Image (cartoon, rainbow, N blue to C red; front, top):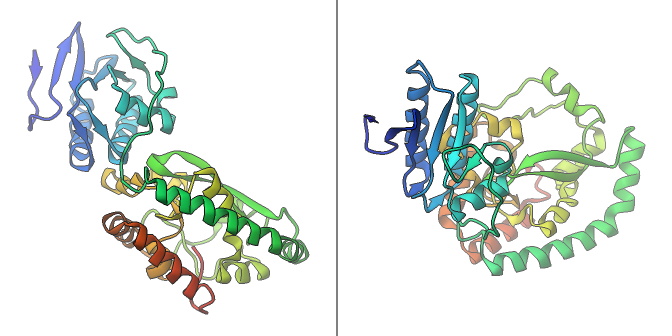
Length: 329
């Protein structure tokens, strides 16, 4: 038996008394939006089965929008006490699930019985040409080594001024989301008071959408304002670039709570690695107060990307670093 859906995508068949949703060959933004719609419609239909099986057998490509839709649907199914199970995941899909950690959260089976398979050796998924560019990665490594040398030279004076200005650690660590939403620990010189994260809820957000900004944030220390204005607080991020969590140029690295509020199309910005600089740094930075502007700049970067374009953005970043209104991200 087949349950008819408004479009031919994502037909649902009943196998052994359980619904099986057939996934398409590609799961990018257009398909991902429809995937979320069909899944939510099914979960709102009732009465609901104990599990919903997603058959990925024919899927050849999935990007961050597909990941976003899958996360949305998994949480929606959980709220309805329906187990979402992934069935017959081919290597391209399995690679995405593995690197994002979803293979440890969502059950995956090779049969219509819920048993976890062992993960084969997987190649990294391909979402944007910049991610697999050997030249870009080489530039990142060389640039990060030079940046870390500069960080080592400036470390003692910066560390002393941070300690003298306010009590607390020298470095600030925070969880951010990188390529395809994979989480990593970003590192900066501390520019706020030690309990800044706990005090965040008391500071009004002057931005619209899934970003947080306050031009007169009281949590920022005196030396912190200088570090942010000159971007010296970001020097330790060269370590993130060397590790491969970030790139010298990319999109703005969001926090997990920002990503939690994304709609499916907004996950497109995670198709590339986050960067220490990018369109948002050069053309927006502290002037951006609307999340839609961030999305626009991030997608423009993906569309215009080339090695020469990366170098242009790096040069423009250097030129604006000490501009009095450059601000901080």
